[in-house]
Length: 412
Image 1 (cartoon, rainbow, N blue to C red):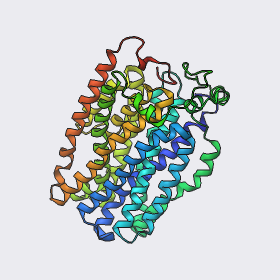
Image 2: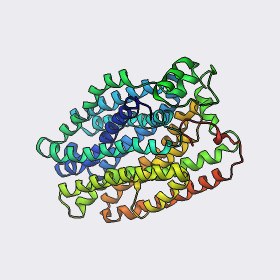
Image 3: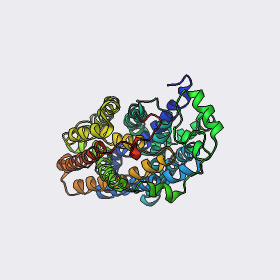
């Protein structure tokens, strides 16, 4: 990467770390909330609350991509960090389920908007041939945030209560001025807006290539619906739907397990500290999986690697990195001017699974079927393996000169 890459990927990683902390904090704090009957919640209500956040993520993911393609990745990332940080403050002061649920929903909108935007950003600045690995490196920060959430629950919640944990999640507000000052704008966005001189200057500064098809062109930014329609033109609609279906199963797994893992482990007789250890291991496995999957995807192709990862996921391995390889595939194969839309809608459609996963865990626990939780989630991994496998087969059969072969930053 370029000499000044520390201002692109690391600052973006910081935002994704905060995203991971805020996403995982509810699951980490949940055993304490249920034990203390905080806000008077029951297991099935707890599942609903988990679903509120993921519903907010659905809204954020579906709207953020098109908004980012209009106003830029940088502004949207700053706005998302601000939103989910303030929403965590609302959760901290909540005295009832309704206000707490509103806080988690608003946090979800910010969380859902940040991740696809950050993926699009680092894809713009990824070195040629290392697009998937760059995205994998970015996503390790998400799981570092998950690990941090376990320690926040262990060191802060026990002595100070659940409110303190959500106050910790307000801290990213302090990072917003740094992000606004040092994060560069997306190259694809600048070119789409006709700001070619800025794009050339940034590409030179960070030692990356501009998208060949747009170099020197002052092309207008595509409209919101034009960017979305691009995902369905010609035979692209089949590929798009396969990605969406795979993302549904992947996020059902990720958010279902992330929300209920500590509680399920406590139900199996583990003490809180031991149950939270599983959260740490869950996210450490995600970090290792991201690094391995990123290298494999750059060498053998992201769809093939994702299919293999989902097969392993059904057996309880590489849960998180399988989903990330879907994002990597979509990002790499999308045109720069509509990349945020493509990733955002893939993430957004998957959020329906993210809403269903926490709800399913709550229903199992309420029915005293918590021991069946992991078995109930396994079919989602199998279905995603099938869908992304079909996408890989279709991608391999594309004729030369197909739209997915266009020159992209970090796409080779």
